[in-house]
Length: 259
Image (cartoon, rainbow, N blue to C red; front, top):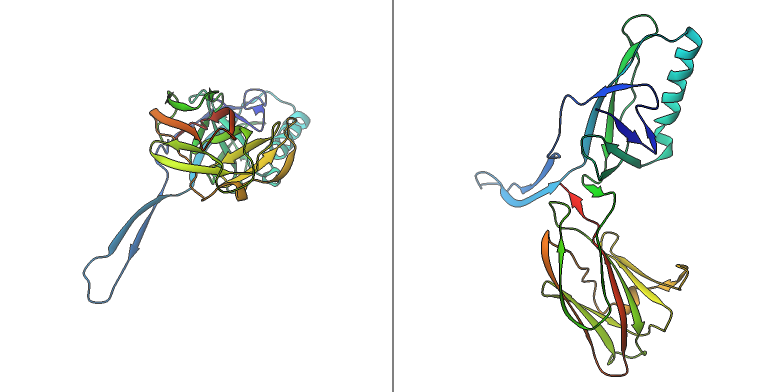
């Protein structure tokens, strides 16, 4: 089993690797409250915690003293946590990407001459694996459409990109209703501008045709009701307030993910 981290594969580093423990379900944080005189606890559900991925590595023998030292230096540089969160892809989970960094230091344990083993623990603050090549859906006419997510096994926090013209004023708007949950966009939005709504970051921005940010898009949202997408079928309805509003296109990046 190999892996890729920050664009470099374990095979290209000359490593043999294996995962001995597969943490398919990250640790859970139980949200409970105790009260004097009450037996047990009050349960307010659970929250998924961070994910930790443990990988055992082996440097096979056959290198000179100088090459062996150089390789260990390269490994330390490659895995440097100062680089921040980097893409981590496991060969046994093709098409899925984690965002990870080292959780703790590691040591090289000598096996035979100029060979060693070492164990890595990667921390994924976001416990989900995301699709390396995601699904995108586009609608260019107002009305109701059904979009079906085929990737992932958990609800997703998509990115909606809306193009159109909305004059200023609270009486003119475009609504996007996702699985019965309505998001109202009020003006102003001009031709050539795109409103980008990011449910994961819970933010919005207006960009130009080149993707350059023009201004904060949150004031265009009548309320902070960010959409989510279920696995499988989702119903999305686009409607305009009147004929002074033009709807051009809605592009949805699913941001499909696996628990």
